[in-house]
Length: 175
Image 1 (cartoon, rainbow, N blue to C red):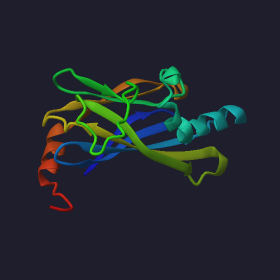
Image 2 (image 1 turned 180 degrees about the vertical axis):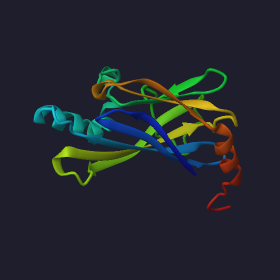
Image 3 (image 1 turned 90 degrees about the horizontal axis):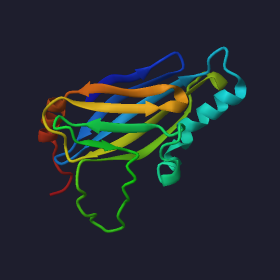
Image 4 (image 1 turned 120 degrees about the horizontal axis):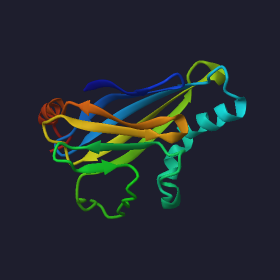
């Protein structure tokens, strides 16, 4: 389902919660990023910041780096006040099927990016995030922060009812 909520925007960066895919027990969010080099930005700074869009995933597994400015941070705050973030350091299980975690849990999944058609002046990227369990059918907050790109702790309201409705329509691929 389309969400199309701008989470953050300034002269150099836009972060958009583009869509959500709801399942009976959880939801996958798709986040899109677009960055551009400002006219007064030196080349070294631009290439360093551009690289963060594509290399940020590797920082999530290094606990000593979790709160470094280069780490893009996502989170949710549910109506009852519980929170989940991508920097909580929860480990993945090698068991299959994996044990049910104590929720809520927000995990950074696949991502990627590339040039945005603007040569050395623009870059785009995308991230997938999994939230378990499914949020309640109430408004909740999606959170983003990225100090390296001057993104302060920013909260955006998300319609939990729309996600719950979509989850109610979800059907398994196999029975």
